[in-house]
Picture 1: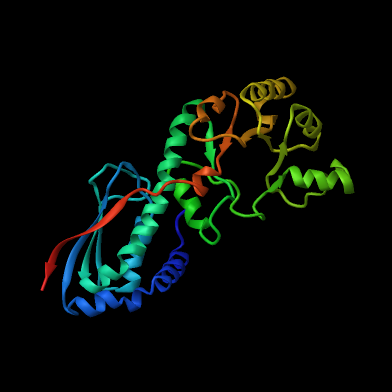
Picture 2: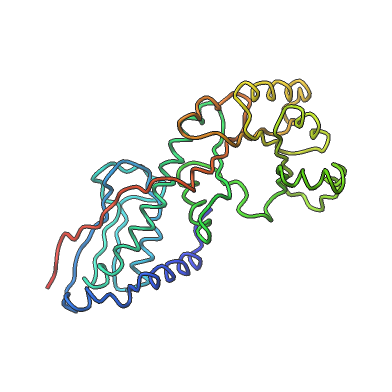
Length: 287
């Protein structure tokens, strides 16, 4: 999912306005108007970098005269002390953009780093790591991009992307109609059903889901579900894919990385990833 430049520019402008970067009274009062600087953004801990292209746009939107040299691209591993990018331009411009550029990069790099760790734990079993819609309002586009940069895969971007029948949907359907309603699907979007038990799994297989989400299943019940589906569908190509969700985190993911599972979805990738520490350092001043 390459970043759309118009979208990036829109959010960069909003972030700069939020920070009143164009009215930075400290820089405008105390920094000479003609002073120029060279600066570098440095990783202060190991991780997977993301948001470099967005940070570049921050500097360029604010002052098109600023020149940027990218040292690390989105998705690349950084070690403590690595230079991620260099910026050369007017001192006032660089200083006014510093926090916005760092906020984007630190936040998104934290998501990419956490995703890469989950992929490392589950990947050897052939399991793909998915994000969820548990995202920051208005920032989902960037957060899901960060998951991709970390080696994960995007679940649906929004409610129009695929059918996902969850517990509350099933509760309403059970009191207003019956499972036959699922045959009313009008497009070829992926059809996924969330189940809470092995009994529900058996019951809803007849609805023809492309994916079965095992919600809050224990590892032992996941193994039973995998065996059940293999028995019913000897032909793997006709078998619904299996997604694990609920109760999984980076501390226990290894227990859920069970052969036969296709996906593990983790809301924690986007709703609680710690930011990756970065700093902007001025390395030279030109008078």
